[in-house]
Length: 244
Ligand SMILES: [Zn+2]
Image (cartoon, rainbow, N blue to C red; front, side, top):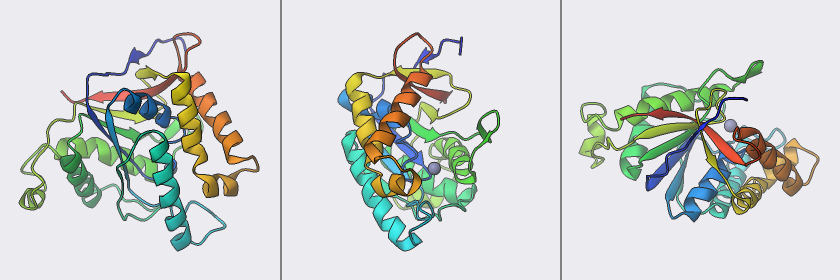
């Protein structure tokens, strides 16, 4: 932890965060989202699944309904109004052309400067295997940022009115074991991020004996304190992939 991380770029207006499951953004990235929306930036969320396989004690149809509602509430806490869901199946997301097409369509529709996703790598760090959905989505997001700008890829999207968008300047992966950049977050951002994670009440209740608010505080403060490499400040780290 001796290397200093570069500051995340702040000269942008619109971001689109694309992740596999409800709750993926709330384990840390939401503090950065709170910081950015408080500064007047626009952030939208795109969930590839409704997280229907995420609660052992709940049937998928019910879990999908509950988790979609929890994700919308969670997003609202950090200033995100636009929350969309694709209908890929939780647990068995396939990295491939159909997923890239869906993501390229979303990028063309939202026209973001920054695309945020979750760790696309095999592990979270030595010994901590990542899940197949996170790998598939993270990798497809990195690919789709390019697809969105090429008018000869997915020509049918252009026929539907989704013209190419080559304006993605960076893809930033949260939770990466190889972070390059960080954004410093303030007390208010952290408080909103804690409240945002705590909105996943049914999910957390099935997962942990603690009260959701208590669990969320421990997780989020742990993450923002671990992310900093500049001494005592709270931050959210990202691995940044510049595109231009
Ligand atoms: Zn996940």
